[in-house]
Amino acid sequence: MGLKKAACALFVAVGISAADDAAASSPTGVFLWYPDQAELPSPEDCKALVSRVRPSREKAEAWLWGRVPQDSELEFYLFLSQDRMEPTFSAEGDYDSGKLRLGRTVGAETAFELIPDDHPTITIKGSITAPTGSPVLTVLLRDVPSTDSPADRVTYYCRFTDEETEA
Image 1 (cartoon, rainbow, N blue to C red):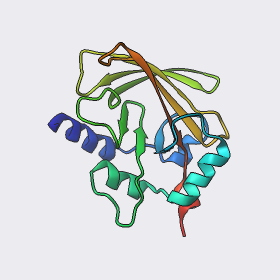
Image 2: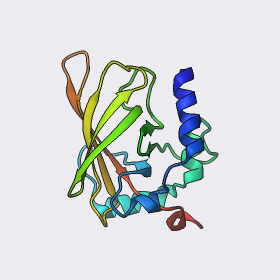
Image 3: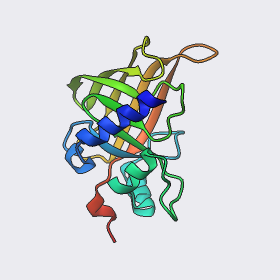
């Protein structure tokens, strides 16, 4: 766990692009987890979630450090930089946080390789789909080890800016 906290400290200290910087086409920034993972959310679904939750970078960083903001509903975030993937809901031993190597972007899809902090001998391949002009971001981890057999894991997120959630 010490390695994860050190990596988080470095991640936050170095800083990452704000989600509004990510809105262009780069899949880096801070993103709000979409709670209904059954199907791809529409842009309207994301806009409604952002309006209701009122996420901010400050709240996301509080969640990252385990400090739940007062009067906050259950919300999770994903921090993406050029070299780190860090969801606030990652459990110890999971495969979704660690060193990130972004690959080529073709259209709206960016390939990546993830070396999980808790499994440094494993490389998870995946992709981030971030269509220009859409608040929806999709992260696909391919062949994630599990007790049954390797399986793909898809997670949906919504882009936001602090400006759109200010009172």
